[in-house]
Length: 541
Ligand SMILES: *[C@@H]1O[C@H](CO)[C@@H](O)[C@H](O)[C@H]1NC(C)=O
Ligand SMILES: *[C@@H]1O[C@H](CO)[C@@H](O)[C@H](O)[C@H]1NC(C)=O
Image 1 (cartoon, rainbow, N blue to C red):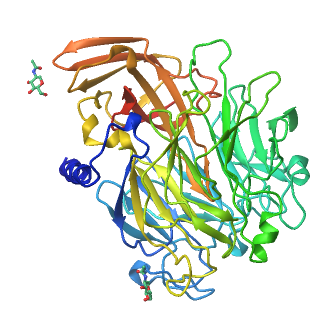
Image 2 (cartoon, rainbow, N blue to C red):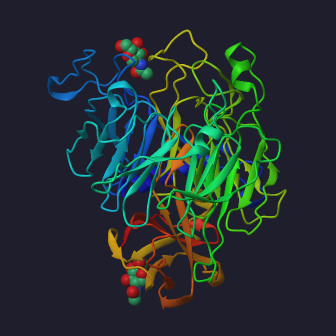
């Protein structure tokens, strides 16, 4: 409660400073707050857990960080008594060191249905590791040597219906595997699509964009095109056209992508759309290596992946962007944040930071979907990240385009800070519209395909037909891609007034197949006139 007051007074102060106009007609919105000047490590990978703590890590092989390991602990080869992982508490705005033993650099992960973070792979000592982080007080990493069937560096993970996760690709790995593996199975399945999309000496197919489609197949995008994979049968069931222009969108020509909010979930056939934004023109990486930093792509491409004959529809962003993060906001809009407008991902080869985030409104008419936001002051280049928090803010951290911690005499020093971006919906002027969830309590288990009543209060007048309930999965975010990011609009079947500014909205929880929403922890929000409540944690069964 105290923190809310601090936040509100901060917002009022900001309002005076910026003299905000109503944001629906405003060219720029949103606010920034520096949360921590330094957490001692750089937020290269981030995952929010069900206890409102964020697990953060960088890499163990680039020297001493600015955060000591407690209790005199050290890694031995090479000797390093500093931490390369930390746990950040959103509620108290504090952090503590964690002990990760092997190299987690450019790794991947996803949260299991029981709330444990399973992180996989990395570099050298870490390339076949599986690491487990249980969200409990004072807990730390445990590691499983040879937990993976193949070495995975720059792979993508996704949680599957049934509770396992799939781990796809990685450098020179044109295959996938599962965690946990089925007993007896070899656990290595070839995926020629990843070699077909591998540009010689450049790749452009790393950290593929993977989404669970509503039919249970996996949409996998690499370089400039995508397939639909029946992973159980190891069969490509659909091939999507290349994005017009054919420019690469995956690492090191790092764009980003989201599965747009899934809606009308009771329909016989639910539609799914993917949005890919930014990247670099063909050849940009080779040019950047030679000191020629070409302008990034300023286009997004949107496709209805459930269509019979899907086609990409192109849109133009207000700013060109490479290494941007795409974060689903509780009201179904997409935040595009971080990154640069020239060069590519890789050591020292990104230029011209893009300090302004952009909000994309998927339901607006083509041509009026982007809205520029107020800038940060901190460049977030290669190795930066962004994730949604339960209170609707977006946690932003990282940026280190150097192969060590470098704080001086470089264009973009290693960033150890954490910032929060406050999307315009957190402005104090909307406090009368903002719903506050009364029940169910946080951590409620929800069975699939059931009616659910969510009670909330709103201080001002309620616009009954502008209420909805959304659920968002917390993503594993690194290298501009949020693995496992998913938002479902549960809609609003009935809104009843209970008197005294309190209301009840009835929705139906997602069906039992797990294709719409694999079981696990989600953030649930009530959204009123585009203004989301603070979320509560729910566990979809
Ligand atoms: C990190 O530590 C180094 C060496 O002690 C110091 O020079 C630097 O200012 C510190 N950086 C930050 C951001 O705290
Ligand atoms: C109505 O809500 C206010 C503020 O939450 C509370 O103080 C009051 O007791 C409530 N009245 C009833 C009848 O529930």
